[in-house]
Length: 145
Image 1 (cartoon, rainbow, N blue to C red):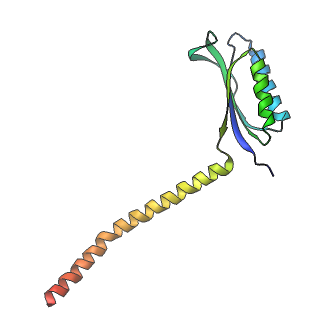
Image 2 (image 1 turned 60 degrees about the vertical axis):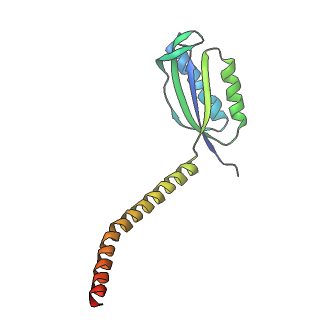
Image 3 (image 1 turned 135 degrees about the vertical axis):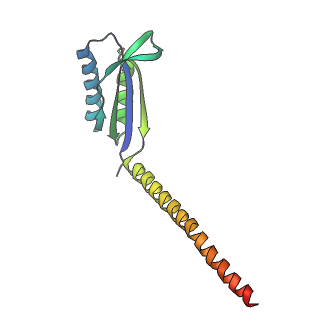
């Protein structure tokens, strides 16, 4: 049984493209993913943004990202190849993100850590009362001597 991994693809497109062409490129990318049995969980519509620094002599670009789950890695190789060949794609990056299992484990760790901190706080709160009681008992014993 293969385990699915979460990924995110972010990409910049040529700012001189018409809106229809931008949407076409986005749909082509989604089709590559879904034909490779990827499950797209979120796809942001491309929007024109001002870049912090020029990419291929462009100060603006259409930016978008797609989050997806994938079991088979050859689809990533095909996606990389198709994006490299498309001259309208200025830059792209695919990264692994935390899987659902990793997210659950992380949340469980946080819950356990909070429980430990609460126990410590309760123990510290109880300590002054106990020490006062011990002080009283000690004084009673000392008075009897």
